[in-house]
Image 1 (cartoon, rainbow, N blue to C red):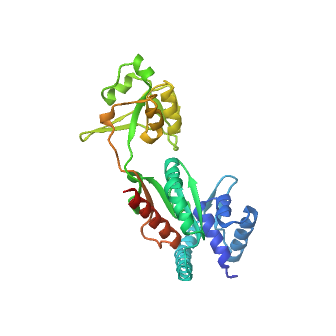
Image 2 (cartoon, rainbow, N blue to C red):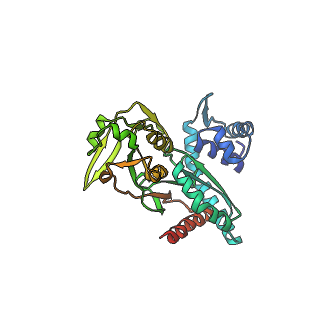
Image 3 (tube, rainbow, N blue to C red):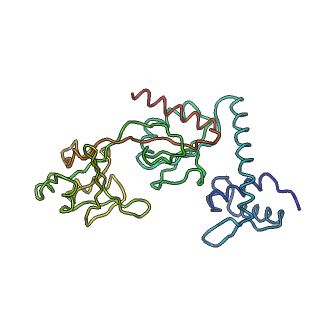
Length: 300
């Protein structure tokens, strides 16, 4: 049996991590056809099929899963060794992949990214805006940014910015025609602008007051999947929306929206940068973490 090359094993690991030739090819910076050819060569070398391929999906065979389990620690150790070598040469370098939702991406671009790129010009930052809460390890990201309450427990979390507040808002014109709700249950008699999550599920509005928590599956004829659109629709009098206050602030300041159920909408812990607990932290990620902390210190 011919001994596989490092490039072949690295290519296999990328496909196994992404379960997609297109995504793995993009991550490696090669064409999909070249990657497919490399994997065919690897399978010929080891004499066993490692991947199940269809026109729509890629999955590991039993042999492929065994190979991945064996080489993954080695590849991670090699990455760590190369990263330490880069540190010894000087400033952090290489590619840093961060997954964040839309509001987090906006915050990073406004506060963190300019400072980070100015201090570490040798780092290539790949910032992916994604509404889904993805497994950052499985999808090949170095770190993610989400609400602190959504960060998986096996991750290290670093605060990014302050608390956030989700608020129920409506236009004065709408409230002139409808009784103002006093409790979350009163929303059942209102037109609400519902929120479809990236998973496809409808979001159930969550309220809290003096330790009492309520979750309401609100009615409504309009469903949207973007906080800014929901705030805009509420300002146009189409119903009550439940959005981050930052998304509604422009309309609140202009008097085109007002808060309802304000005492049921307390602040909650805001965004957090998170990364795997038990893996080597690359120098580029460590520099990004330090930049986030510096930004927090200046804001505080």
